Amino acid sequence: MSPSIHTPSYYDSYPPLLRPNNNPIHDLNQDPNPLPDPNPDPIPVIDFQNIDNDAISEACRNWGVFRLANHGIPDALLNQLHGRAEEAFSLPFDSKHALKSCTAMAYFWGTPALTPTGETVERGPTPPADMKWFEGFNVLLNQLAQQLQVEDPVLDNFRLVLDEYGRHQSRLATTIFKAMAENLNLDQNLYESYLSPSTASMRIYRYLKCPLPVWGLNAHTDSTVLTVLTHDEVGGFQVCKGDDEWIDVKPIPNTLVLILGDLIQAMSDDKYKSVKHRVKANKYKERISVGYFVFSAVDAVIQSSMYKPFTYADFRAGVQQDLKTLGYKKVGLGHFKLPHASP
Image (cartoon, rainbow, N blue to C red; front, side):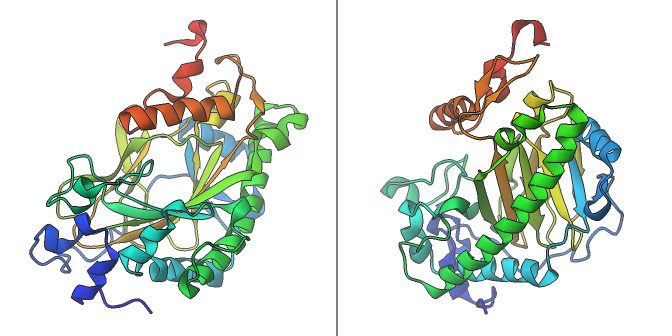
């Protein structure tokens, strides 16, 4: 079991810059609004055991996100997933930080793209203004079965659960994508290259208690075909409907949230929406979420009437360049937009 969050030693698991003793705050553990909002959200719901292609098409065109019910993942596995994640995040920071160079399960904090390095950033008195209040593990599923470079029973148990959960995610994503492809009349010969589970990864986030009025994760779209999200009972996840209507996505037990990414928007000739989403920081509670990200085969050429032909490798190179130079994805699909398709 992880240590109580009321004990000072618990915060040894936080990155040093993001510990409460470096950012004093009163009553950090006392939430003045402990009860969740009972009102339902308007996010469409798809029953995985009775898939309705028309309902999927409507959700993809109008929302870019939907909730997946009756998905077939055992409750025991989901409970294990969150329990093992809590145990892994509760490890001392130095133990997690040693995984920075591990290819199968790499640790990051402060930014999803590039973990800060250097004495000034890691040991400075206050966080930089653009610091994000989370930490996480980036997991390459096709390498996860291999032995980790660090011997730790907590991390090894976590690895085993992630491996099993990843197989379920592959099943779900493949089935849902097939329904989308049929709706879009995509060539069946493209199915396997347009969605390739061999490219899949997972990111497990712990959004830390944050004393500042900031976003845990800024508004962005995913560079995926599909993203599948599971999160704990702590809210904060929002999606954008239309141009500027932000909607809270409630954490409803035994459901998953499926998010459309940039690649499926290109495949659909912009009929489907790559939805913007963000995460609100919470002053009183931590939030754990697990995202499954699946892409096209690296060399698969995506054909679209709205975009120049491009591969996922091309798309990723543009995104990585933005992340290195700007710290965030700026252009994305815009790199490949055809002149006649520009707004």
